[in-house]
Amino acid sequence: MSLDIARLIAFSALSATEVQIGVASSNISNADTAGYTRKTANQVANVTGGVGTGVSITGISSNVDQLLLKSLIESTSDLGAAGTTNSYMSELQQLFGSISSAGTSTKGTSLANTLASLETALTSLASSPSSVSLQSAVVSALGDVASQLRDTSSSIQTLRSNADQDIASSVTSINSDINQIADLNLQIKRMAAAGQSTADLEDERNSALQDLSSYMNVSYYTASNGDVQVYSSSGQALVDSSAHTLSYTASSNVTASTSYSSGGFSGITVGGVDITSQITSGKIGALITLRDKTLPAEQTQLDQLATQLKSALNSVSNGASAVPAPTSLTGTATVSGSTALAATGTVRIAVTDQGGKLVSYQDLNLSSYSTVGDLVTALNGISGVSASVDANGHLSISSTNSADGVAINDMSSSVSGVGFSDYFGMNDLVTGTGASNFAVRSNFLTGAEALPTDTLDGSATLTAGSEVLTPGSATIINSFYKALTGSTNFASAGGLTATTGSFADYASAIVANVASKASQASSAYTAKSTAQSTYANSLSSEAGVNIDEETARISALQNKYAAASQLLSTVNAMFSSLVSAMQST
Image 1 (cartoon, helix red, strand yellow):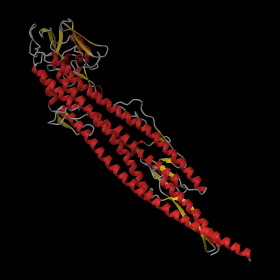
Image 2 (cartoon, helix red, strand yellow):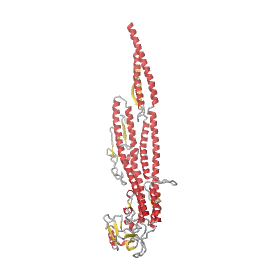
Image 3 (cartoon, one colour):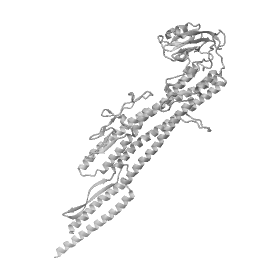
Image 4 (tube, one colour):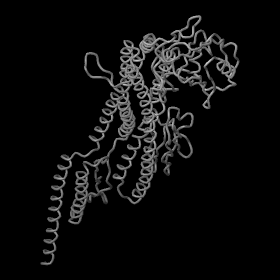
């Protein structure tokens, strides 16, 4: 071997080793950098004329298993969905409260417990029906039920609004990832064309792709020109030769009636194409499901409870009267004088004094009246009664003497299938169309009207001055209690099957259903987290940095560098000896 070749080999070894030491050092310094993979300096032998002339570094690369990376990206999408669902279901479970356990002193906070408190208040009142304070306690307990229904409903809509806002912020994060991947595609192509290493940029691109997948499910592949192209699940381009960002506008007001299908929520679009239904995983996939399915289902269950409770309580209160009777009764149904009246049977309207004694009365044959206006005329024909349809479209029946009151007995009346008082809502205890606006009527809350506790005498004939309302009767109170605790038929709602039971039982079923869903969400999150960690650890084991290995590699390379230096020194000494020998001859 000539000295020139020996020196060339030594120089190339020094140069290659220096690069390799630099790569190993960089590996160690970036060991804790998220998404960084171990880099390797690719060394090849140089051969000239069939003779080895040293080594050279052809590039710096990382070895990432693409199938493993794809599995990691898919599991990251699943984890993004599971984590989001778990977080929201945990909030929902706290919102619905807890049920007190048998044999413990801990009082539950759920709607079932609030209903149980109402039952207790009614039991106390039944023992002393004339007690003003106990009547007030019942109204207060019912007010607590109403408040909890409204608050829970409102909080569900707040969660839906939060989910909608989270979708908007997630879209912003997705667009950042999409733009970053597109920019990195360009940088990688430029550096590759210049013969420079693209390994670090590829790491950044893989990290951006993984972050993107945590928000939505995507498909991707690497094109022949080195570009990573990203698509939605149905093939809508997100990154090809350029970035295609998402558009979304969060709703400014979310109510129980707001839905995506009705246009209440805007669609997530790419280039004008709605891809909302294509996003089935990742954080956004979970948020869409929560906003449009899971949370509305819970609202539906609450509404089922509220509407059935309203019907049960009002059915009792409309067949009863306060003692003494109120001076005026105003219905809740919206009517006008021209509203057709499909009615049969007889209703009794009576005027009573403060002691419940009869002043006047009349039984009206409802089949005689074809419109509400006809009915009002007949009501005004009763001695001591004034009737009208007020400005709000509600039937009002009043005593012309402010010292007297008005009481109703539905008798055999039937208006559209229900009693007269029930149809017009003359003595409704609660109002509302669902949980969101379920409320105790203000005249009961303020004490302007006492709780209905008796029924107007339904005898065939009544005599002025006789007692037709009896204070101290527990009949109506017991009817309220039976309405709460007896068997009510609840239709299937929000995933709960049709069932029969008390209101507290149904409220407990709602709470148990939420708790079950929250438990399932927690278990799913744990499973998805374990799966994602397994893939991440596998990728790290294969392509991550092992500091001990890199340190040992540097030590070996330093020895190699020292050997190459020694060889170069020896070659240089031989050159010097040869030159000296030639000069002396």
